[in-house]
Length: 338
Image (cartoon, rainbow, N blue to C red; front, side):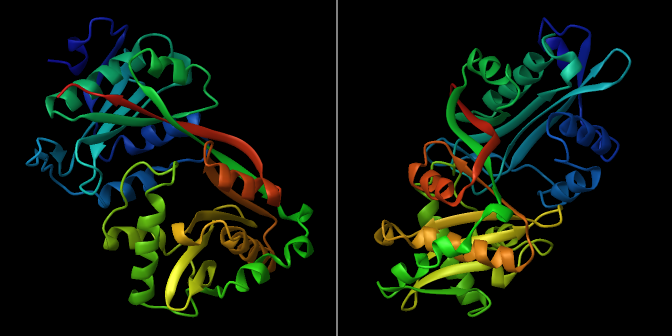
């Protein structure tokens, strides 16, 4: 039986299971219609290779869903053109009960019930596995996306948007005393290149775990150390001397990090966090100032980052440096029946 037959208003479209590797290029094309440059067939294949080969979803002693598993489906029109994609998945390290999802429709085929058909399949799969929460993201520049999700029971959980800093307009002299002020408290600023090795990396991991807990832009728990390390130090975009650390004695109390991007002269601030006990003393601003100076010395002309709308302290810091907000995405969540 066709996957789409369980939904009555399926228009002239049908759902089918994903075909690998044939569908990679078509899915990438669909993603790039929504967010240009966001995917390639090669990047999708690389992501797949990092996933477990088989599902092992189960419920823990509290009756909450744990383990790994996913469903991925394609929406086709009568001519066999791929016009939509949907997936629901769960990584082993996310909070029990949670499932993430993604659903998108070709711009020319929106408003015809295709998105609702995809979402119906995703939610049905989530309910079959007795998940308690379904999350997803929506691009904020697609006007109808948030109302579509809200009408179907999703709630807005966060609004995260990009920020851009034109380094040609940035004057480092205005921030020369930023690090000096924090240093009066006994804080030293180093890079991971000054203290390389697993011990330092584990200290950074512990700091990121602690600071992410009250970061409104963070939803899931951080993965175990081995997976976090792969994400935090990607070989093609990370360098030890681009990991800037605030140190009090032997304690790591703050961090910010730069990534290279596919665009020459553009660097991305991947993460900034400061230990709760050390906040309010200008450490985050000092770290950002040091990283911006390093970017300028690298010949960068632009820096980018992202921030959650309600993260007032980080919003203030970014705006004080001259970052300009741009497009972003909404994080949405829906409570499911268990």
